Length: 134
Image 1: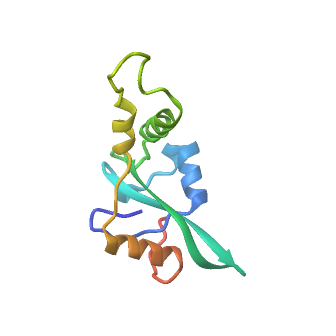
Image 2 (image 1 turned 135 degrees about the horizontal axis):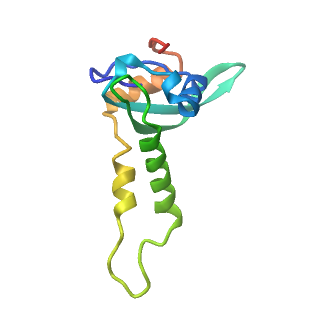
């Protein structure tokens, strides 16, 4: 997770899964009433040590006034992403492109600066410390 001041914090996969299944039971008060940038890194390991970042996905998360994750917004973005991949965006014989899903998807993504991406990669590989969100 990346806060408004570009500070990195680690959120465990199990905590994120718990937030998805029961958002109100797992608030993060420091993110109350904010849209927060997130990055998910898939890391290759050798002998339980991170050796290589395979891929990183950058996304946005919206939190309520209590710091509760807005899972509805996240699901809308995920559904729109699938829609852009699997659905027909043009009607037969039409030259009009239905881009609604693309706009929803783009609102849920962000692109880091090269410096911030390097910090995220370093944190994913354990070369940079970052606090764990509790």
